[in-house]
Every structure is written in structure tokens, then in C-alpha cells.
Image (cartoon, rainbow, N blue to C red; front, side):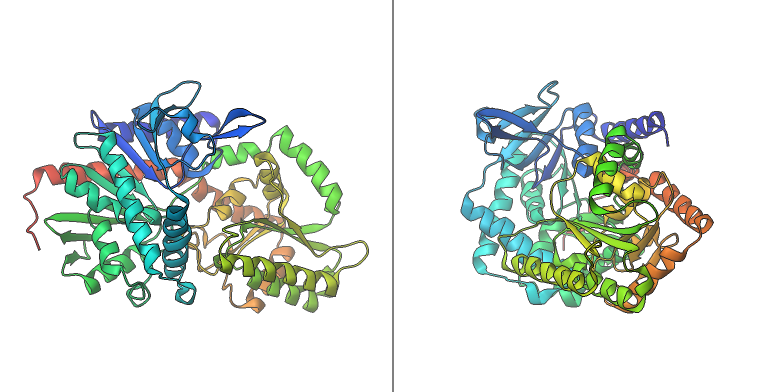
Length: 507
């Protein structure tokens, strides 16, 4: 897809958002901020959105001149704002406000590291044994959500359009709704939503649902998560659940529940994979790690998180090399990991176990001239990572649970040379869109993953080209701009219906 086509798609998304907002303030609310300020060598520098959701939303916010509310965690953030905690961004052409929420160390420990990442994260990824529902975490989460809501209310005095992002902010919509009854509130939940029997394990399930049901629209990645959410509301509340229309009547309002599978900027990813900078990176990297000539390699890219299935994948690779000695010294696995939440015990222990597993596999099969598993932890430039995607013979994307998984889509979009093969977990949300062109595996079945690696390495070029072409059609058609446009088209339809329909009965 050409950059001109991508530009037109992005403009259509911006126009859809602008049509809904018209003369209303658009407020985006997220834990992470789109721009942060840091000190380097005594100077204040700006970190800008490099990719993903933030990069896609930034031009939308510039076009509609809205407000973005987020936690100000940069060490120079306070120096750049006015007395109201607001800084205009982007720095070179200010067009929207970034309103920062200041959190104490205790709040970060309780709201972010605690409740968000040690209660909601394991709960939604079906690992309740890792939940740590400390009462202090809940207090911090509740208080911090109030502060985010107050920042939203401080950004507007009329009926805004407010779009909350993710699991950090489940309670904030209720406080905003109580103060701004005419506001249009939407929420996108970026991780899975669990079934009722799992969600029931959370002691605050009623409060979380009440907070989310203050929204007019709640978005999830997949239909499965939508069904799970409706089941939870049906089981836990007295709200009227309309499964046919996927809506919920609660406290005099109707909340609509829809699936919006998040995409990537696929055209930009494809362009990155073909840059001179990417070529230069690959030439140096491949020489350093022996990935030259006919040598084949698989790539895994993820945060170091227990949901990503890294340990299970290493078990499968060990089985593969044990059963297929002909691929020793001919095939390498490259694990690009990004350290995550290293101050939380479960993540510290995971990092140690993954390191031990890599050492075990390398000690068992490695030679003086070949390292079976190459672990890369340093930062890679965008073009360099795109070049790795382009050159990989296969991508191993095998999480044990994942809301979507954008790495799978990045790999597909970057496949602009000799095509590789996507080996994808059936437990990733992306399997709903990408299942047909990939090799689906169960991450807890090492034999199936090992067989998939063998199948991918033996696949003909023609078969690979057909598969990747099918996947690329999906990834380009359902990119991040299509996600934005679909979300706001749905929001606009709900708003039109709400203005013409009688009020919902209070229950």
C-alpha cells in the first residue's frame, strides 16, 4: 500500500473523529503520555511517539485540537507545564493540550505496579494464582482513578467526548459520568476480558463493572471478549443485558459493547523494512550473529512477561533440535526481549528462568561456531527491528494469552522480501484475523510447536508467498486507522441514536 493511500486512510479516520466531536472537546485518557520530557546532559529533551497507538492518535489529536490526560512520569515533565499542569504539544507546532496527572511514589506502587499489574493483569490473562489483591493496592487504584477523572473534568466544562484507554482506568468513567451526564464516554480495553468464573476471583468485581458501565461504548479486541464481558455483567449485576444488540441497560443509561481489533500502521512498517538504515543494520547484525548465506532463523519479539509463552517456546525449540539434529548449526532462534516490570517478583523470577532455559539449550546443542538461541536485550532502532522481521524465515508468536499481539502484524507487514511464515498461538487475539494464513499452535503443546517449526522450514516458496499475501491483505485493510474510524463511526451512530431515543429506565 502506498504512502499516499495510507495518508488518505489516516485523513478519513481524522475526519470521522472530527465529525463526532464537532464543537465538543475530545479528551483521550491513558496511563502513558504521548510526549514526555527528560533531562540529558543538563538539557531538556522530548521523547516523541515512535509507533503504535500513541503515534496513530497523535495526528488525530492535532487535527481536532483536543486534550490528552496522562501520567507525567518524565523527570523534566514538571518543568515544561504551566500552573495547571498543561503543556501544548507537539513542541514544534502546538495544537493540543497534554494535561499531566502527578502521582506519588506510593500511588505508582499501589495503582500501577500493584492493582493494575498484580491484580487486573493476571486476572485478565487467566492466571489468578499470580493475583495479589492487597487492600492498599485497591485504595491507590481508586484514588488515582479519581485524580484522572478530576483532570478530565478540569479540561472541559461542557459535554466532552472522552475516550479512556485500558485497564488502568476502569473506575474513572463513573466519576466523569456523575459530573458530566451529557458527555459521550468510550473505553477501549487493550487486554483480554476473562470469563465470569475467572473475573469472579477479583474481590472488587462489582465496582469495576459499575465504573465501566458508565461508558456509552466499550471496545474489546475480539467477539470472545465481548461475550465474556456480557456474561460477567449478567452474572454480577441486575443490569438488563441485550445479547442480540450487545448492549447493557444500567442506571438509566445504555452501554454498547463492540469488538474493534486493533491494528498497526502497516504501510509505515513495510516502508521501514525497506529503508537503507534497515539494510545497514541487517548487514552488520547478520554478520555478527552468523545469520548469513543459507542459514535460517526464527524470531521472537516481546516484553519479558509470563503471558508471552517464552519459557514454553524454549521447551519446544529444545525438543525441535533434539528430534531434528539436521537443523543444528543450520537454524538459529533469535529472542528479542524487552525487560518489563523488573521490580515485581513474578517478573524477576521469570527473567531468571528464561535466562536459565537459554543457557540450558545452548549448553546442550551449541558448538564453538554456533549458538542455538541468541538473546538480544539491547534497544534496536525501528528500522533495524523491521529488517529483522523482513529477513526472518519464521516468527514464533506463541503467547499463552494475549489480547491481540501486534508483533504478529508487524512481522506480516514487514515481509517485503523472501516471505517467511507466521507461527501463531491460537490463544492470541490476533488468531481471529490471522489464523488462516499462519500455522496455528497451542503454546502449551511443545510437540505441536516443534512440528510447526519443521513445517515452516520445509514450506515451499510458493506456499509461503500465498500465505503472506493473504495475511498482508488483512493487516493492511484492518490497520490502526481502520480501527480508529470504526470506533468513532460506532460512537457517532450511538450518539445519534441516544439523542433520538427515550431515556432508559433506571434499575
